[in-house]
Image (tube, rainbow, N blue to C red):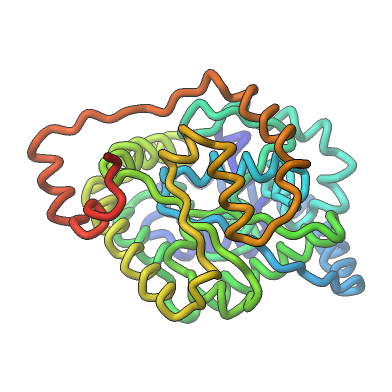
Length: 355
């Protein structure tokens, strides 16, 4: 995995930040970080040229549509359905893998680079191809934004560092928004005239910052039975630790991290949402999207004021046919575990638990 690691596309400043913010860099990780730094040095002239191109072109970023929701709440299913229509500009695997050189290297070499894309996601069996929508997290991490991937790369002190990069302070928020705006400008330049579709679960904790930076943006909030979110989130952490870790160490204190993160993220989201106009945020239940995808998507179009669902429906149906065999994991929880979840997530269980 290390030869196909996301850091293969990181800039030198981003790699320096990973090293600087790590609690500990074991000797076994040094060769890999040196390898990623060498790749960044070799790309540096192209990186500078593309930065100059963007400065000269100054593309206007169209108003984004953001897909939010705690990890494992159905955000991937929704973004795949919306992206299948072709009406949005979405980050693809090569976009996020080479964010600083996408236009000058990624675009002409995409057929070759696409062969390095894994056939499935790191965390589940959802298929990935060269056009599959991706979260912008890899791209922003490779551009030097604070990222929740960093504690997986070098997991010593995982729980503390995870909270630091998920719930950003003022300085971290400025750096993240700056990198995001630059990256979205690249997408706008490559897909002129199309609105951006950005999916990232960590943004659920950053609604106010996004709404302030993009005052016309709309937000779709995916929700799922919290008991299912809990079990799937534990698997999510374990799988990402295996896929992204540069050391033999693995993330620790995972249950506490999951319980704390969900509760804190929901509090942040509800606080920020209360300050916005009600029509800027639309809720979508994963269970409804799973069981009634076309009807749920049509309702979402109406809530967002989007026209043309009848025209988009055939493309959505084709995507649903391609993924018809996929089944989400189900998680059996013992009584003690359910009791811990109920204590930590009581308000959201009452609201979002599936019947």
